[in-house]
Image 1 (cartoon, protein in one colour):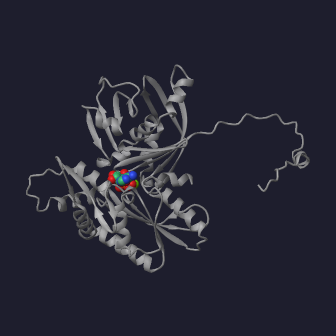
Image 2 (tube, rainbow, N blue to C red):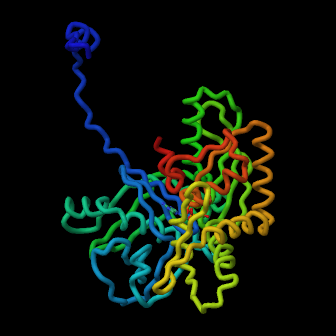
Image 3 (cartoon, rainbow, N blue to C red):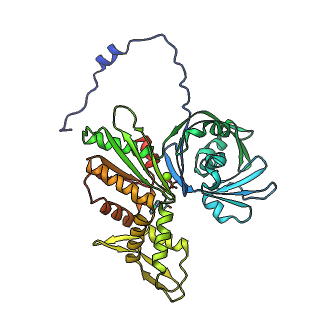
Amino acid sequence: MNGTTPTINTQIKETIAPKTTKTKTPRKPTVPELFIDGGSTRTKYYLQGISDSYQSIAREFPKGHELPLGVLGVFAMGDKSYAVGDSAESLGGGKIHEGYANDNKIKLLQVWIIGALTMHDSFLFKRMKKQKEGTINIDLKLSLLSLSSHRKKEIDKALKEITFTFDEREFKINITEYKLYPEGYGAACAAKKILKGMKSKDKRFHILDLGGGTLTHTPYSNLNGVPRASSQHSVSGAGVMAITEFFGKEATKGDTGGNIYHASRLKETLESSHMVDDQYKAEIDLGDDTKELGDRLYSGLQEWSREIIGVRELLRDIKQLIRKRERVFLTGGGFAIQTIRHFVLDYLDNSELVTVLDNPQDVNITGIKS
Ligand SMILES: Nc1ncnc2c1ncn2[C@@H]1O[C@H](COP(=O)(O)OP(=O)(O)OP(=O)(O)O)[C@@H](O)[C@H]1O
Ligand SMILES: [Mg+2]
């Protein structure tokens, strides 16, 4: 401040704020907005300053099944009870609905929404404290990502009446409005911000999203206003789960020691894999031993990019776009994994036109607020 004290010019303040006889109207409380991206492996959400995610699994229990009270992600709806995320993993019994198989993304839409509300560590609790008895009515705006607008009728129906019981209290959610956004929309907002920062005149940019289940390329226009998606190209069965499988296949090749490579262990190994001086490092615990599988991971990634035709074509298209000097932004949880990031950047010739967005695992949702 160079030692100067900021002064407030009260004179000006008075002249521009003439006295008025209007009575103050109380400010309408703003309706909270829940952003939710139901991914095939993780359901991400943002509500009142908190962004979090839970595993996209739900366990359904029949009528009368006793469940622990006040546990995050555990609630009753109609005559059934549900547990989502970690709670679904840790509780036994009932029927498990995994990810978004069997059209669960839409069929269980209410469950994923209530799941997010009951996973939030303050949203419902604050209201329960304020209103000690009776049904708690909550107005809520909703922003849904990665749901096709072709299914609007079914979405409308699912959002009509949302009532549930959590920690022995009844809740009724009134959806005041909802919006549908394409997959990777938050990432597009974050990318647009970067382009603005570099005063780019690019008309178009691209989002490449590597999720748990799918690899998706979405071109966006960089014209004024919000980013607008044009056609989307999705390869399902090409995400981190597929990479884990290819890695697993490579890892077990030539192992005659009778080691068991559990899928969950392989996935953890992949998630914590990293680069050391251009070398792929992936350490797996097998019984009392640890085994370095970096080279196997590299060949697994090569297989993934070669064997799945959709991946091969999509990456080829991206290369072509880069040749045309168009920018590509990488997002999705897959790019939070250092080795995958390195592999794809290398595949795309380490072009300066490719940018990995910060926090690729949740920018798809947090970016909307940026
Ligand atoms: N911080 C992290 N470190 C390592 N890996 C991560 C991290 N966050 C996410 N991942 C990996 O990314 C995967 C999920 O990514 P993401 O949440 O983008 O997928 P999704 O949206 O559920 O799937 P899809 O977009 O295919 O429907 C996880 O299964 C995990 O393997
Ligand atoms: Mg996703």
